[in-house]
Length: 77
Image (cartoon, rainbow, N blue to C red):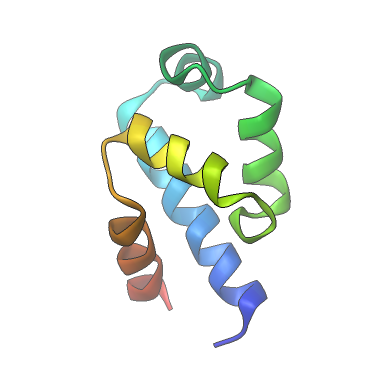
């Protein structure tokens, strides 16, 4: 498994989690306090290209651990 493939899997898990818990990215942004453009960039460019701080904040807002995010991403591969 290469880094790009894993980054895509992480991004897919984040999209799924946001989609399950919020109506849209704007609602997630408002609820989490994370800037809309930051979230949009993570989802567009890939989670692997984002800081661990941003990913950690997103996970906290989604009520999942970073470890759980990684485990879910591994299951997609």
